[in-house]
Image 1 (cartoon, rainbow, N blue to C red):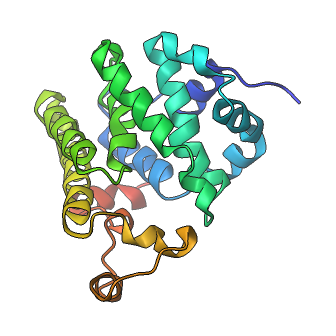
Image 2 (image 1 turned 135 degrees about the horizontal axis):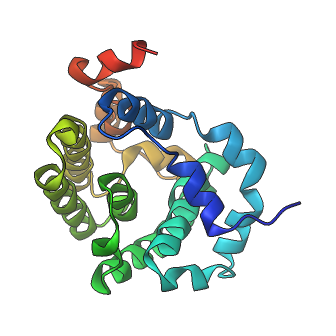
Length: 216
């Protein structure tokens, strides 16, 4: 079996897109966050996740692009490969530490696109630490201000998601939707939250963005 390198992770996760094409970007966003990447990840990147979890890929943290690739493996690929199990979240603390260190040493600032930056700080939004959540919101909102005009609506949706996750942690102190797989007892307030069927990570895009999903 071929051993994948960080360049393979980056080329898979960030396919070439036409410049200034909001429709293509919305479809890519849907592919990222609605399971479109799953089959390929399960076929090609299981071994890489095992290596990353064991620390065998820690050298990837020496440069911005390879650090981002390591974050994708630990934060995104783990959620796909171990979906529905506690292992899906087993690498979260390591991913958060790598994100915070990368911000401190300038790796985040060195990234060129808002999409790369989004996935660099996303481990903070998966954290159950309110300080990490606040930082994720700060970075997401800053991207809205910095981005080209045509992408601001999509990045505002991303920022609203970050705020939603932050608010959940501020209220519950944890991500309630993980309770079952982590063996945690849900509180009455959390059960009432589930009953609303409005989990942040399952929210649909607003119509002005989702309209592009049917224009394929």
